[in-house]
Image (cartoon, rainbow, N blue to C red; front, side, top):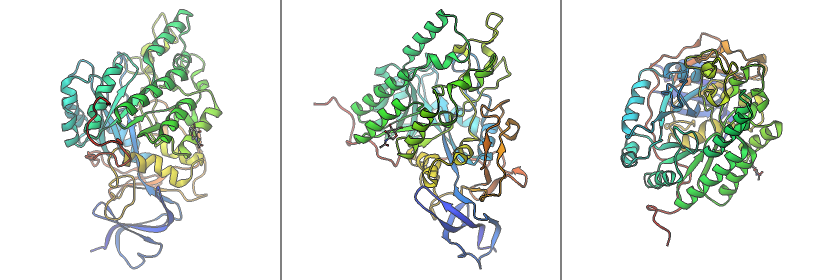
Length: 492
Ligand SMILES: *[C@@H]1O[C@H](CO)[C@@H](O)[C@H](O)[C@H]1NC(C)=O
């Protein structure tokens, strides 16, 4: 019998805290040992991979993924289901994803939603997964279910400050925060002022501005920064940890940094679209700009990108997620073109389904850009999402005896010719990528999930099996939480 299931030799191992020449031994789906190069030269294994000096990192954890959601805003529904979305994930090195289980305002219970979402994912996933409950109706019943959610392995929720179909009133946000604090649940917040966006939309339509590019104008930075400040104020008042999702602009980032410097448990996320796209990408001939319509919109230009990179480097951003929220482009039934009518041949920006695909490209883009220290890259794309959402140390690390053997092996320097991305290279169920033609110099060469090679780019590509991915029960966040013990009460 072999000593190990898998040996990974000659890699440069990078975690969130360490970089070094180590070899890795895997057994029974776990990291059995990480030892200096050469330590396993007399050992036997069912399979051995020579990393040839390439980076060996923990598998990616993407904590912001929309799959197979019901139409929440009228027309349009997500192009990827659990099968195609998770397939795309592993082909890009994301071994764990946390998707949304969305509650509609007409629905009372969260537990029913959880059950229905389990049914969609079960036996369909290529990677490991969990869910965030998306709360749009914090009814008495929904709030009373938070305790059971924790027992079911759900330790995070998401709420919205915009979109009529999902938006909570300020008092409802406070209700959620009080109960979330009590149950040690992290609340993710989409921070944009919905009324400001509606008002701006009306202003634009009055002037007969309907093209996709006006989506960016309708979502001014001010609406994001104001809501970010308000969310932080509520979090501070209730002493409840929050994460502001998909932060796109420097003023919002500075507001978050200020809260963090004051010691508040305020966390933040950004996404590749705020590093690589600008509002000019929405300004294309005809309807083409709709391919890059997402919310918040990509901002002005390089200075904004630099500010977001700085925020990643200096810890303002805890996590870098994809916000994978795909709609097919050339699709008038469920996709972007549902907003085209005879009266509006170039569509109406306010009805364009919001969101772009990106689960497969998140890691390769960020590593190819070569702007973060390697440990920081692992921290924001893998270790921190695992820590914040209660998956650590099982996910996000290479901890002996504790971590699942979820591993990405990258190409050693000089081995991969830089190449231009084409949508046909991707494994999602979307007919475009907003990043067509982008030149990359890295891509995961091998992706390993619980000891199984599920992606081997040069020998067969996708090797994983649908249904191998499992639901992972999550614990409370292991990053700093509420500063006071006990339940919230009216301050004396
Ligand atoms: C960190 O990044 C944020 C976001 O870009 C920025 O506002 C802040 O000034 C930076 N802080 C430091 C100390 O560099």
